[in-house]
Length: 102
Image (cartoon, rainbow, N blue to C red; front, side):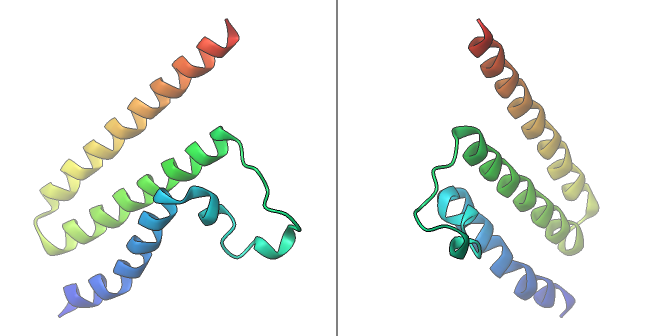
């Protein structure tokens, strides 16, 4: 019964994060649209960071759900996957920044 409650609570948040990953511009304006007369233009870095943060949050939700429903070893495996994803994106961003400097 506890697992169903976790799923019911976290599923809408997971859906919003997926939507935010697919539409980062709309996600960045969620609840903030009233501040702007025209639609603002976000930089590529801001959109990248918004997607990155959405994936990190989805990993954390997955870790919580998998660790509570299944054995904790699966949560540890997801945590290793999270660290690998972060490392990969940091290296990709670093190479992009170094390429722009040259």
